[in-house]
Length: 250
Image 1 (spheres, one colour):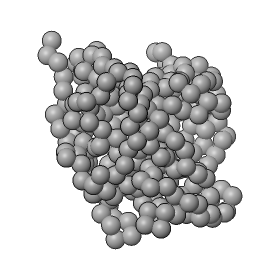
Image 2 (cartoon, helix red, strand yellow):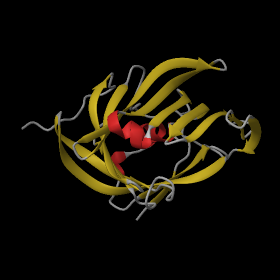
Image 3 (tube, one colour):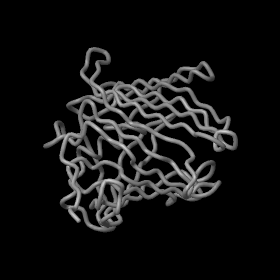
């Protein structure tokens, strides 16, 4: 088993995503649709720097909204060259559990300015080298991960900063699998991100993610064991991919 600690290496050899990329996921318990989630990427500027502005939304629908309503908004402003975030916004309402936080990253001074809008507080917290936020981590890995040299059991570690501090984000590679999807037969890479158990997830190994085994590395299926049951998020629509979506002919 190989443990890799990710660091920023500058411009990736070939970017996995770009302006105009958009995904839509159906979140469901079996045949029952619980909600939908989207991710989109746009060109933008923050503090005079060119960035990718990534916006993620998740909302429950129908009866699920009555039982456990979710309205989540995430934003990350990612440097186009260095693949590091300059700003992260997390505004969520999950069954009454609410957060409204903006984090501004000063990587040169290694300071994160955390503005908790719900509690009307501002903190300056030490920031480690090459820290990512909850959204930029995924896009960073898409750009920097060399999938050709992955072996089953490899573990990838990186620093993730959210809310009030730095957390060690760990991702384990489980292997490869070809999935039958609405788009056809798609070769995938299987990963297991380690998550915090307790409020939402049953245990640290509750989430499994399948991403396309191509230059896009897009998530096509996510499974999660929650405290209130198990759910899946399935990719249903996409546009603006930077590379050819690899589909195996029938």
